Amino acid sequence: MKVVELLGKLREPIEDFLLVNFGEKQVVGVTADSRRVKKGFIFVGVPGSKIDGAQFVPKALEQGAILAIISDQSKLPRDFDPTGKPVFRLQDPHLALADLAGGFYHVKLEKVAAVTGTNGKTSIASFLRQIWASTGKLAANIGTIGIEGPSGATYGGLTTPDPVGLMASVSVLAKEGVTHLALEASSHGLEQKRLDCLTVDVGAFTNLTRDHLDYHLTFENYRDAKSQLFSRLVRKDGHVVINLDDPNGVHFLAVARKRGLNCLTVGHDTEADLVIRSIVVDGLEQVVELSGLWGDVSFRVPMVGAFQVSNVLVAGLMAYASGVDAESVLAAIPNLKGACGRMELVAHAGADTAIYIDYSHTPDSLEVALKALRPFVKGRLIVVFGAGGDRDTGKRPMMGKVANDFADYSIVTDDNPRSEDPALIRAAVMEPVGNGVEIGGRQDAITFGVDMMKPGDILLVAGKGHERGQIIAGKTLHFSDHEAVAQALADTGKGEMV
Image 1 (cartoon, rainbow, N blue to C red):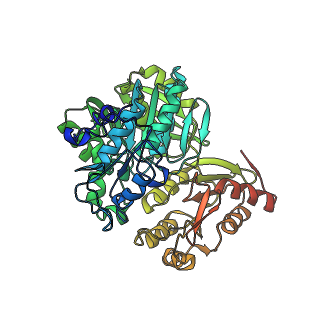
Image 2 (cartoon, rainbow, N blue to C red):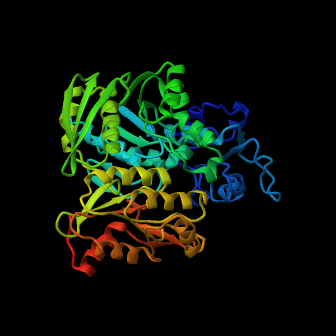
Image 3 (cartoon, rainbow, N blue to C red):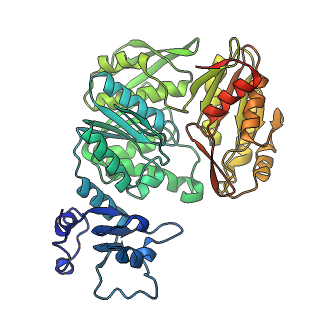
């Protein structure tokens, strides 16, 4: 593709006279990472919270970049003279990167759906993929746990990948025949326009609680970042699904309605399009009764927790909005499987026991997880958890209080200490905990929890979910809660993985 052709995809145009010497050159790649620049690449130096990509323009040009795009507010290195060099300034390099990625890969899908909120995004994206697949569609989902598609799953690391990485993955999926794609829309991803490389047909909101305030500073800023899915990203004639059981749902609904989007709602509110009439516990499953848009229906959800019922229904409405009939959605729900590390039943440690792994790493998500498990507990509810380093310090005692209030026994351990002293983090978490113990070392803590289990107990291992690494002293070491539970079972001689 020629430079002039690709730059024609930009919503913020570059002045024509600047392209005279560069427009006919062939583009072989686009990147915002100067380390990946090769001859024939376009480099976009996006401004970050700590480092401005403009600082790497000299390196990118030296490595063969055809041209570089930076913010009109960025400062280039003092010893670099841009005169006569292909360095272009735009107001929004983030949008430029998305436009270039979308234009370079030029992938067309039948349906793209994105879900935002604090908790539940991964589960909803996975459920939506499964519902689509049940109707014969080739579908995939991309998010925190990586990529799940027709050919299996691959591990990932970012909730919303950068536009180039996202489009590279989408391109591969499209070549495999994928026509339907479900995405997680993080607040960072929305604010940095990482999804603007795609046309979003269906958007959804699940819930909103305190998270990422180290980046957004205030809850209002965090909410506004999430709102961008509806205020600008979902296409003008697109559909929106809103969970009204969350108090912030009315805000997101108002944003969507202001743009004239087609809105569908779900919740216990009798004004919702899908009204949840009742949820009855049956073993480790739930029987749900609905009224409203799909009529008076009853179906089985093969998972624990009322929040999973909400996640399933949000995904179901997203599928419905994308063209799947209600009967097919309802037929698919009893066969859904939980996403990796999302209230996932992973093992039993003896008779009438269960061990779950969940990604809950905020006070609100931990409370939701513990409350969700409580109706299924015949003995004690035990939780292993911690708090991350170099993040919002205010939530550490809040995490401890939640465990103290909603679990029978709390085991405080390490999450991702990052650059901080793990003992200091644990001490902050332990401050309000009066029902448990502090154990440094996550494997030891999990083994302790498994060993203390008796018939009727449920153990929740919270905080890391699908992750396969633990960041300690700035280094990422291999660690998996799934492997840790398996090791604990082997060490204690109790139970087995499911």
